[in-house]
Length: 180
Image (cartoon, rainbow, N blue to C red; front, side, top):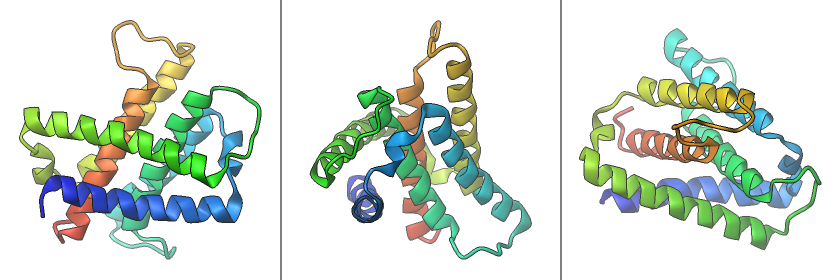
């Protein structure tokens, strides 16, 4: 199986969860401001890091499910940036699915372009690095928020979310391969 197929399978498993939860809960996540989405991702990344360091866990959700949650929250963050209003609205499942797939399409193209230039270096990376890189991206988003969303020469919030999506997809692929 090649990277594109593995990527699609990893995303498909995340999207399946996302859409089922949307059917269960609606789009209750629409109340989240950017900082709340960042904090949700932070909680999941921090939990993975703690499990990695302690080499044990007491709660049932495993590292695989936490990476899926991180990926899905990053997509929520991107959708929220697009809608960009404080009005809570319930989005139909079909619209959520459309927006989800639009974000995945952009993330996949980014992955393909970076794989071209970096030669799939991610395949040699540790799971710990994916978590640390995610945490660093979250700190960058927090700093951008402190700067009223403005950057002088750096990528914006959306670029950081796209990287988080791809780090999570890579981690899911490597877990599936039995390397992590």
